[in-house]
Amino acid sequence: MTGTEDELAAALDRAATSGTAIPAPSSDGTGLPLELAYRVQHRVVALRLARGERAVGVKLGFTSEAKMAQMGVSEIIAGRLTDAMWFGDGERVELGGFIHPRIEPEVAFRLGEDVDLAGARSGAADIGDAVDAVAAGMEIIDSRYSGFRFGLSDVVADNTSAAGFVLGPWCSPDTEAGSRAVSLSVDGTVTATGSTAAILGHPLNALRALVPLAAKRGFTLPAGSIVLAGAATAATPLTASVVTARIEGLGEVSLTAT
Ligand code: OOG
Image (cartoon, rainbow, N blue to C red; front, side, top):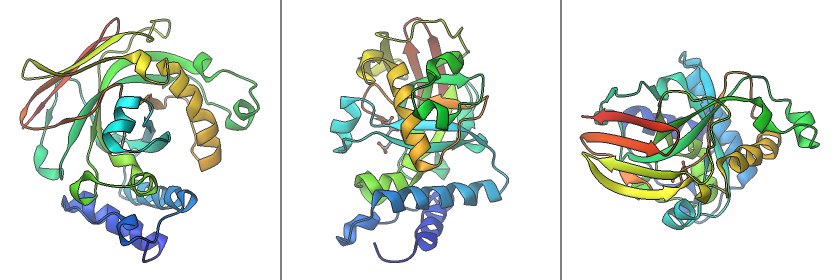
């Protein structure tokens, strides 16, 4: 990578706010250490928070084989969600501000209590016990990199392509989220199907995998945090259409892209 952490964070922020892609930092062949990539991500998120956005949760990436295969990446990553990314169920989403958005179905958890990452790291508590609600959701990803092409550290620096999300009605935390059929449809045509079992065997395993990652990379998980467990299917390009995700037992969620 050429340039400093601050320069890369500023370039990623400009790319997001202007809807103009930039080359991935690793494309110059120099590489970007993962540690540094998470520091860039923190700066990118800090720029959003400085504009008045509020941190509302965390998203996981590459928790399924389908996603790893689609993007050629094989390690779990995490990024931050803010209130500005949050669309209401059924809401209209303007595509104009995005670069090349894609959409994917997600299982969402809500944490009812602060997660003590130091304690959790030593295996003292199961983060699953902190979940107070679960829902079907969708995530809009929009890589700030040209051609949606990147290496692992590049996408971490780019806040893991996080660009938007929508949540369906919350269900009881006792609702079984494992081995549930998942589908995504665009104007009524199914574009992706899968099972929540593809998410590390069970979406709760993704939530558990977040704990050491969050502790290591300086994330916090306060009460009220939303956690997107990562897509069970490959992502679908988001074009002007009505998109609906259905997760058996959790219900459905939609948005209208225009
Ligand atoms: C990175 C984000 C991956 C997921 O659910 O696996 C992700 C990307 O594919 O651009 O959000």
